[in-house]
Every structure is written in structure tokens, then in C-alpha cells.
Amino acid sequence: MPTYITLWDYTQHGIENIDDSPDRLDSAIELIDSVGGELQAFYLTMGAHDLVTVAEFPDDDAAAKALLRIGQSGAVSSETMKAWPEDDYRDLVANLP
Image (cartoon, rainbow, N blue to C red; front, side, top):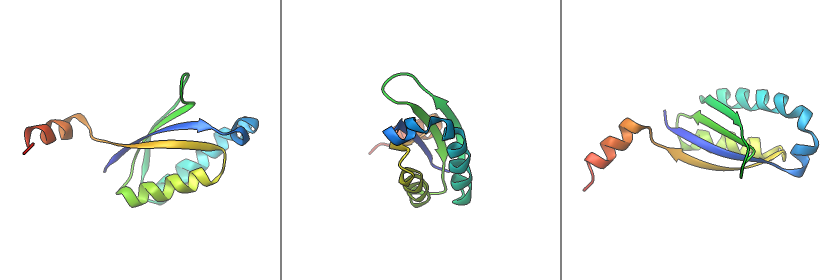
């Protein structure tokens, strides 16, 4: 399944309700599962972004559906990158035109 790395930032609403954040994470995991995805990793981070997730989804549409719904909560904003693992990267480079 394709991999997606997402950089998350708490909104003012999200940080004001930080105690609810673990429950929001649980809901996000359920949502990701419901579209056929799987959360591979979750990190609280220090620096330019507050959270980082790595998730797999069946396709771009499933990823977009889940990420849009999570963003709709108003607790976080996000930036998502589609990612290729090392083996796929090597295949891509080896087969460049």
C-alpha cells in the first residue's frame, strides 16, 4: 500500500483542548482503519511541527478522505507527502528514461 507522511500542527482549538488529543488520535486511527488504511507510526515532535504520522492507505482517494475528515475537526492542520520506500526508490531510479 502507498505510504503517506503527514506533518501536523495543533490549531488554537486543538491546543486549548490538548487533554482531548489522545481521544482524537484514537478516533483518527479508527477512521484510517475504516477506509482500509493503517497508521504505521505516530510521533509527538519538537520543532516546526507538533506531530508526525506515517500511514498506509489503499490509494490516494482513501488517504484524502481520511485526512480531510481528520482536518475537519479543527484541532489540527496538516501537510501530507506521499512517500516511496527504499526498494521502490531504487527501482524508480534504475528505470529512469
